[in-house]
Length: 349
Ligand code: GDP
Ligand code: CA
Image (cartoon, rainbow, N blue to C red):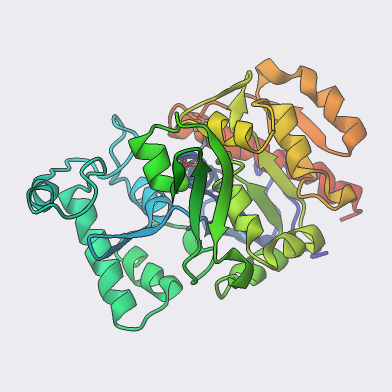
């Protein structure tokens, strides 16, 4: 276990170089990452105590698809736009100041999905990504080229360079996750989720190093089934997490028995997990029992589950989990790092 880092509320800065790796889906992960970056910039600007932090996000690509000949990567783009400050805060997704003229033309030609509108600015990203992929770059390389345009302060790594797409099995047949999510608003009961090609997929370059070389690993408040579940479904990633020397802290995407944004409850129901912070923690499992978590953050309103999770080997902490703005997200990030601190201490670091 690397011994050069101690994170004591990050107010008392020690000398070191902190590597924080975050497993992330789209919107929930993006908000968390923005808060984490803000917290680290505020708490320890470069040079203070000689400490700098490196944040790497390992991002779900199971929602990606080819649409109108373009490769669309919703979770990578949600994070990129949010960290770039180019996201639409009011709508909650996509680019700010967006227009939809190109999509209207495509619909008139009968191209694409009429219920899945891609904004004009957003299409620029997809065209650039598709250009890089068709030029022979991997998704990791294409993502590096695309994100280089912005000052993100976070390295985005797709979970895999292979095309692993989540299909939803319903009574009306199987469909791409985006069709189920956006067209059917997750209202069509999902029987199963199938990650196509997952068994032959490889973690993208850098992903296993980001996990094995991290000082702290965070499981963002992202969809446990189709964001985090897909990432850990890539062969090798779960094992790397179980064996990682860094503490793993998860943040619940569920508050008081409900999802905060989106429809993740429909996904949990499909895999037989209750929509509660406690049930999701038990679903991830304690690392001491071969699972993913050392610690788990629940909302203050779910404080009851703290005692319930202890016997399962998960150190839970009840703190405000609503990421209303950058400041509240940064406080949550600080609490997440604080939760990791006793785990280091427990190991005698
Ligand atoms: P998606 O890929 O865009 O669906 O986004 P993610 O998978 O990253 O995250 C979706 C999850 O984020 C949902 O289950 C929400 O409940 C959760 N979420 C969204 N906003 C918040 C928030 O403010 N606090 C917490 N704790 N969870 C949130
Ligand atoms: Ca997603």
